[in-house]
Image 1 (tube, rainbow, N blue to C red):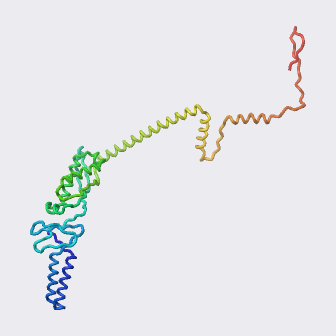
Image 2: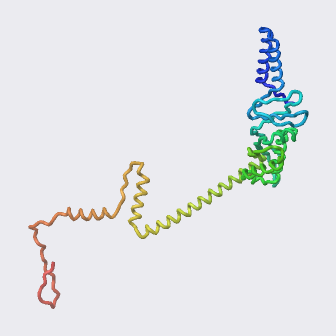
Image 3: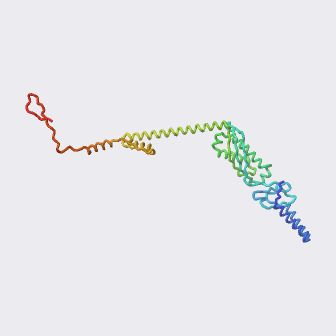
Length: 306
């Protein structure tokens, strides 16, 4: 039987007993003192209390008499007794399955947490010998069944679905036990170290493959852009020269150097300067002398030649 005495009941009973003793000893009031002592003893045997989240299961002559609480409640002395007090708060139970084979024959260890609470106090107290232990055992066996029916990839990637599967299995097994608000969350899934290394290498290789594919795609895109730019530069040489000057500037802007780029502008400027600088001929210069050109025999006359 559950002992439901607590400090509040003890204090109340002692208060009435002490008051009765004081009336008898100091006031000489025997009837009043005796009545107070009787009330104190009666309260001590009949008065009980439960916390807000507790419910007391009462048996009357060995049969179920009801659920009482929270707060103050009374018992019939010698006829009623508190069998147990059930905690109706939401509780958590840690469950684990070690070295359990999955559907694809991989040994794993899984840790989970089961959340539950008592919703039917009578059933949980009178139809189960130890509802906490039984809930933990059912959850553990259900966890092993779920692992055995699931592949390793599903355990690692679809935990929410595994949670729902395990939760539904536990609900079906505990139906009629007075247990409700069942929820399951998987904490951790451990696999053998050698398999963990193999999976790590596989994942690394997959990431490298994806990186290479991405790099190749980028190279293709760059080549297409370069090909398009080459067609533009082929039809517009000025754009190519401007691009070259921009590249040269970008390569040397942080060095503080001066770059001289030969262009056709320098030749044009040189010819213009030469024409402007050349001195004009003097005004009094003599004209060039004309010398006679010999005439072949048989021809008359003479023609001057320069």
